[in-house]
Length: 279
Image (tube, helix red, strand yellow):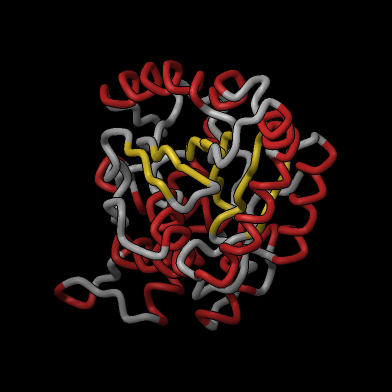
């Protein structure tokens, strides 16, 4: 299965971001805490060169907390700020505000020395589709100031949002990059729903996820679905279909329904806190 999805509006969005970066003090990148490597767009490194960088490990509540801490240490070693975050929960937003001020402290002090008072930090919010940028901005601002949705590609154009006298955010559309280095990146993005499911073979995707989970989190599937993980991947999917009553007419097993159920339970966190990638 080919994991590629690069609609035309993403090329236009990238060009616009290259223009807007001149106005920016800080690049805030949201990644999915379960797959920080695959959910990081490598184009952002070039785009944000010579800018302060803050990485928000979003959906950290769905990720393995020990691995969340490992990732925070990883970014710190690379002179980047990092914050674990559940963008739906406003409780963590004060911490984000403090880190933004810390990340731009030198810039703020330079402005004060030059007599420039009350100039807000201008931050560009970037990330791949469906990583939670709009939800983060709405939580941070305390009001619904951007469109949100659980489908990739909801934000189509840029929006400036004045949060308070200290921070202005530039929201941008989610962009992927034209070609993945290998299928692993695309596969992991498909796991979390950053590509349209209609473009994927969900049964094949579920078999790949089963392979990763039995290797990295042995026992999780056995406990959740009361099955034998020693079976082949297709055998595990078959057991899952039986245990959850995924049937077609004539009592034939419905593998596609079972696959969709597994993907949904992984994405929603019902399988537990799972991180697929480590530093």
